[in-house]
Length: 637
Image (cartoon, rainbow, N blue to C red; front, side, top):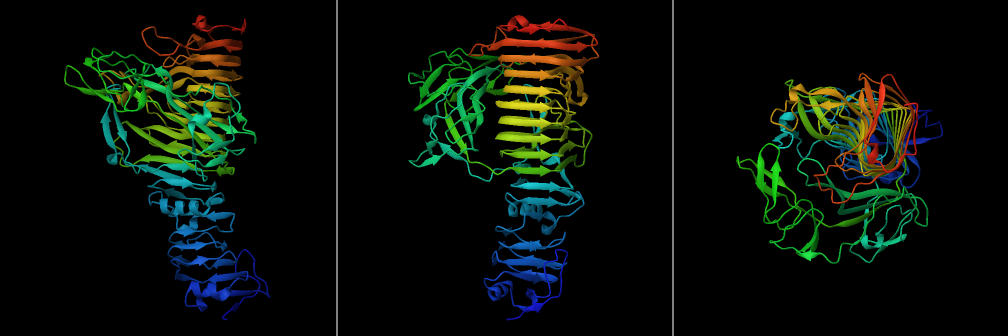
């Protein structure tokens, strides 16, 4: 057989010595012929300078590929051995397989360092080859025009550049905010941090649970729609979801609502879960009456229609109407139950829509355990292409994490174009055990959204020594549990519904966005500004704020008025307030509108601890009578 004997070394890895023989690809008609010649022995195949056709070839695990500078494999192939190459392009095509390398260099797939050329294919090729391994991204500025899918560790010394061209977006006017919003095309690029284990849908009737439950009813569960049984493993996650909503939401038209949903981690082989269950999940009501077009329905009514059960989200019936604060009254009438919105027409001819029904559905999803991964130095910069200097609200999310057991360290997402008012920078959703260490976020200024960091249906999230500023909300959330913020600097922290939330040793401001005339015909987005508001806004239970420096706020903690649940144990301890206003409110209990039907009564705090609050100005408390009991209100305030 043809062999090339090499002396001492052919590269930095020093893998060869005098006694070693190396196969040289140039001595064969094709890579397939070289693989046949090597057989099953452990061997190194030298790839000399040039382009080599490898389409459809499978390279076994016993072969190490050593690439000379300028050598490139062209075509789609599978590699199961080790790759030895420098920081230059060696592939032109899709590479699959289980490589032996712990680290895959993204430069192998042809990264272009100019901040303009699309590097999506090169980056995704590296991510696909390094599932649960590590991708290295060298120094440089790498633009991407398509979504990126991270499936393992990342070490990034460079910058990913997202160039937004709003001319490709759809512009829509809102009759509620009186503003235009720009909606991205369906193929809008987002950075995804993905699970690698497939989710499994389970039979919901096996998992009717009560609030505060800490153990699953069974660890051998039935897959939905089958008789197959799956074992729920320690380290996996269980996600519960029910459209039998926990509260109507006092927002916009009043037809919004909060579904019940949450995620917990399975922490033992016997089905113990953590954190505890936040809501109660029941079977649909068995006594729902058939829907009738002559009946007047109110929020929370159940009806049966077409074999399904529905819950009313807004009043409907022969005399039902909706009154817009500007456009006046529109008739609703009897609405056949469905998940579709109902059209409205005001007297001035303007059309609108409202949701009157929501079909009852319950789902249970099991996520098998994921290997822990770390993402280091992933920096994303956002720019507007051909900016006209006009403020634009952009309904997009830059990056999202839906994988458990992820640590992001020294990462950043920042908008470099102040006219781009972005909705969300980082979304953490449907996962647990996510940690952010020393990360930076700036630029989510979309008024009404504007989340630098948002965790939704997430649990056990740790945010350590991070910075999240220049936004509507530095941190936001919905249906999340066991969130810990330690150190760092943040603009307003606001959560729609949280349980077991702790903020300590942080610098927090009440700085948030404002648009003059918002929700009126006088709304002027070009005059958008920052104003002082509450530093913390919450619905949910067990909120603890300790040893924080708080500034630029009108109130330290405000209970949200859209769903007035602020219950359990609430504490504000050892905080310093530095404020431009002559006085600041410590806590403003949730405002419960007497004219709004929340369907279910508010839940209010049973224990409130306020101690050692120090301020230059005077300290006030408001609406403490809306709280059921006060353990301590310290005289120092």
